[in-house]
Image (cartoon, rainbow, N blue to C red; front, side):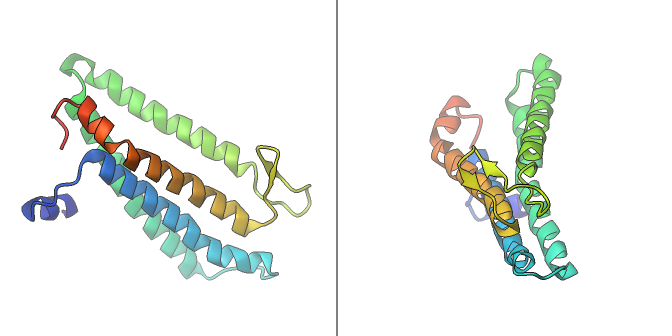
Length: 161
Protein backbone atom coordinates (compact mmCIF):
# COMPACT_ATOMS: atom_id res chain seq x y z
CA UNK A 1 0.00 0.00 0.00
CA UNK A 2 2.90 2.34 0.75
CA UNK A 3 4.31 2.04 -2.78
CA UNK A 4 0.85 2.62 -4.29
CA UNK A 5 0.29 5.73 -2.17
CA UNK A 6 3.72 7.09 -3.06
CA UNK A 7 3.08 6.40 -6.77
CA UNK A 8 -0.22 8.30 -6.58
CA UNK A 9 1.69 11.31 -5.23
CA UNK A 10 4.37 10.99 -7.95
CA UNK A 11 6.93 9.96 -5.33
CA UNK A 12 8.01 6.73 -6.98
CA UNK A 13 11.06 5.16 -5.35
CA UNK A 14 13.44 3.00 -7.33
CA UNK A 15 14.12 -0.54 -6.20
CA UNK A 16 17.63 0.26 -4.89
CA UNK A 17 16.20 3.12 -2.82
CA UNK A 18 13.47 0.86 -1.40
CA UNK A 19 16.06 -1.78 -0.52
CA UNK A 20 18.44 0.76 1.00
CA UNK A 21 15.55 2.05 3.13
CA UNK A 22 14.85 -1.53 4.21
CA UNK A 23 18.49 -2.02 5.19
CA UNK A 24 18.49 1.30 7.03
CA UNK A 25 15.36 0.29 8.97
CA UNK A 26 17.04 -3.04 9.75
CA UNK A 27 20.08 -1.19 11.12
CA UNK A 28 17.87 1.10 13.16
CA UNK A 29 16.10 -1.94 14.61
CA UNK A 30 19.35 -3.46 15.82
CA UNK A 31 20.54 -0.08 17.12
CA UNK A 32 17.28 0.30 19.07
CA UNK A 33 17.75 -3.17 20.55
CA UNK A 34 21.25 -2.20 21.66
CA UNK A 35 19.56 0.04 24.25
CA UNK A 36 18.09 -2.77 26.37
CA UNK A 37 21.15 -4.89 25.59
CA UNK A 38 23.28 -2.30 27.37
CA UNK A 39 21.21 -2.89 30.53
CA UNK A 40 22.29 -6.55 30.39
CA UNK A 41 25.89 -5.31 30.25
CA UNK A 42 25.14 -3.21 33.33
CA UNK A 43 24.09 -6.29 35.31
CA UNK A 44 20.37 -6.67 34.61
CA UNK A 45 19.26 -10.24 34.01
CA UNK A 46 16.31 -9.49 31.72
CA UNK A 47 14.71 -6.89 29.45
CA UNK A 48 11.09 -5.96 28.94
CA UNK A 49 9.17 -8.03 26.43
CA UNK A 50 8.11 -4.74 24.81
CA UNK A 51 11.68 -4.29 23.50
CA UNK A 52 11.51 -7.67 21.79
CA UNK A 53 8.08 -6.89 20.31
CA UNK A 54 9.43 -3.52 19.07
CA UNK A 55 12.46 -5.23 17.53
CA UNK A 56 10.30 -7.80 15.72
CA UNK A 57 8.01 -5.03 14.45
CA UNK A 58 10.93 -2.98 13.09
CA UNK A 59 12.62 -6.03 11.53
CA UNK A 60 9.31 -7.07 9.91
CA UNK A 61 8.93 -3.62 8.35
CA UNK A 62 12.52 -3.86 7.07
CA UNK A 63 11.81 -7.31 5.63
CA UNK A 64 8.78 -5.92 3.79
CA UNK A 65 11.01 -3.29 2.19
CA UNK A 66 13.52 -5.89 1.00
CA UNK A 67 12.06 -9.32 0.25
CA UNK A 68 8.92 -8.62 -1.83
CA UNK A 69 10.68 -5.80 -3.65
CA UNK A 70 13.59 -8.07 -4.52
CA UNK A 71 11.35 -10.94 -5.65
CA UNK A 72 9.33 -8.58 -7.81
CA UNK A 73 12.46 -7.10 -9.34
CA UNK A 74 13.96 -10.49 -10.12
CA UNK A 75 10.68 -11.62 -11.73
CA UNK A 76 10.36 -8.43 -13.74
CA UNK A 77 13.96 -8.13 -14.96
CA UNK A 78 14.95 -11.73 -15.65
CA UNK A 79 14.44 -13.28 -19.10
CA UNK A 80 11.23 -15.28 -19.07
CA UNK A 81 12.86 -18.68 -19.60
CA UNK A 82 15.37 -18.01 -16.77
CA UNK A 83 13.00 -16.52 -14.19
CA UNK A 84 12.96 -19.65 -12.02
CA UNK A 85 16.75 -19.86 -12.11
CA UNK A 86 17.17 -16.23 -11.08
CA UNK A 87 14.59 -16.58 -8.31
CA UNK A 88 16.70 -19.49 -7.07
CA UNK A 89 19.75 -17.20 -7.15
CA UNK A 90 17.77 -14.65 -5.11
CA UNK A 91 16.96 -17.29 -2.49
CA UNK A 92 20.54 -18.58 -2.57
CA UNK A 93 21.74 -15.05 -1.76
CA UNK A 94 19.39 -15.14 1.23
CA UNK A 95 20.99 -18.40 2.30
CA UNK A 96 24.46 -16.85 2.05
CA UNK A 97 23.21 -13.88 4.09
CA UNK A 98 21.84 -16.18 6.76
CA UNK A 99 25.14 -18.07 6.84
CA UNK A 100 27.06 -14.81 7.32
CA UNK A 101 24.65 -13.79 10.08
CA UNK A 102 25.41 -17.12 11.75
CA UNK A 103 29.14 -16.43 11.49
CA UNK A 104 28.62 -13.02 13.08
CA UNK A 105 26.44 -14.58 15.79
CA UNK A 106 29.51 -16.61 16.73
CA UNK A 107 30.70 -13.33 18.25
CA UNK A 108 27.98 -13.61 20.92
CA UNK A 109 29.61 -12.42 24.15
CA UNK A 110 29.39 -15.43 26.45
CA UNK A 111 30.83 -14.44 29.87
CA UNK A 112 32.15 -17.98 30.39
CA UNK A 113 34.30 -17.76 27.24
CA UNK A 114 37.13 -15.44 26.21
CA UNK A 115 36.16 -12.13 24.60
CA UNK A 116 35.39 -12.63 20.90
CA UNK A 117 37.06 -10.33 18.35
CA UNK A 118 35.67 -9.20 15.01
CA UNK A 119 38.37 -9.65 12.36
CA UNK A 120 40.77 -10.39 15.18
CA UNK A 121 41.01 -6.72 16.21
CA UNK A 122 37.62 -5.39 17.40
CA UNK A 123 36.57 -6.79 20.78
CA UNK A 124 32.90 -7.60 21.37
CA UNK A 125 32.87 -6.95 25.11
CA UNK A 126 29.13 -7.09 25.65
CA UNK A 127 25.66 -7.26 24.19
CA UNK A 128 25.61 -3.56 23.27
CA UNK A 129 28.62 -4.03 20.97
CA UNK A 130 27.10 -7.24 19.62
CA UNK A 131 23.89 -5.54 18.46
CA UNK A 132 25.70 -2.41 17.28
CA UNK A 133 27.79 -4.71 15.06
CA UNK A 134 24.63 -5.90 13.27
CA UNK A 135 23.30 -2.33 13.10
CA UNK A 136 26.57 -1.13 11.57
CA UNK A 137 26.66 -3.88 8.95
CA UNK A 138 23.07 -3.12 7.88
CA UNK A 139 23.58 0.65 7.78
CA UNK A 140 26.82 0.36 5.80
CA UNK A 141 25.02 -1.96 3.34
CA UNK A 142 22.19 0.61 3.08
CA UNK A 143 24.68 3.35 2.25
CA UNK A 144 26.41 1.19 -0.39
CA UNK A 145 23.10 0.23 -2.06
CA UNK A 146 21.96 3.86 -1.99
CA UNK A 147 25.22 5.08 -3.53
CA UNK A 148 24.94 2.46 -6.28
CA UNK A 149 21.28 3.28 -7.05
CA UNK A 150 21.96 5.22 -10.27
CA UNK A 151 24.30 2.52 -11.57
CA UNK A 152 21.75 -0.20 -10.84
CA UNK A 153 18.99 1.81 -12.51
CA UNK A 154 21.23 2.23 -15.57
CA UNK A 155 21.91 -1.54 -15.68
CA UNK A 156 18.17 -2.23 -15.87
CA UNK A 157 17.92 -0.30 -19.17
CA UNK A 158 14.91 1.74 -18.15
CA UNK A 159 12.84 -1.22 -16.94
CA UNK A 160 13.38 -0.15 -13.36
CA UNK A 161 12.12 3.18 -12.05
